[in-house]
Length: 190
Image (cartoon, rainbow, N blue to C red; front, side, top):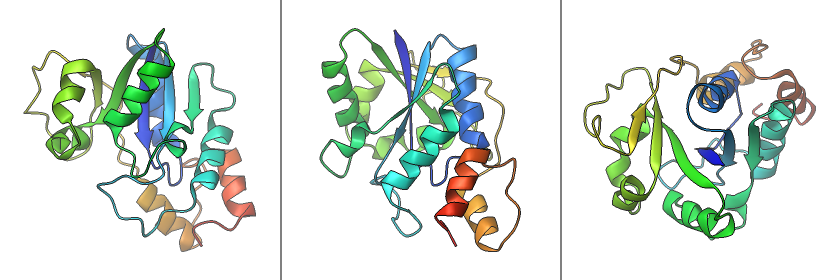
């Protein structure tokens, strides 16, 4: 099976994440998308990150009715910090029957040279790129491992949602209902 791995902190998961994952699972050659909830991105600050178990639970609640979307906690089982190449290597060994691809935004592609063993990622894995506001894809545009998709452009961010929620603003329709109820019940991000 062709599986796309969509890595993220999902802090919190929101409709932008789900639209991207759903697009990749239904409008590309991928048969399934796994949302890989990362404990901590080595290239980001930890400051606003709530615990991984709450982020995993919100992602599971948000995707429980989706046919071809799954949530993965694989990076919890690997040494920290978690690097994409290490996770891919582990998954390929654990599930040799699957073909894994990466899903990433144009912003991540622009900084891929900062990633651990990025050359191996480009050599050994296919990468599906979705557009991000303010990022034009120039470098790697014609790379044989890169597929640039027409995923709807999302200008929604978890940072925006956290800030709005903290200020008491309504984020209904931006965060899936079940995840929003979970956030509210645990008083997350406030």
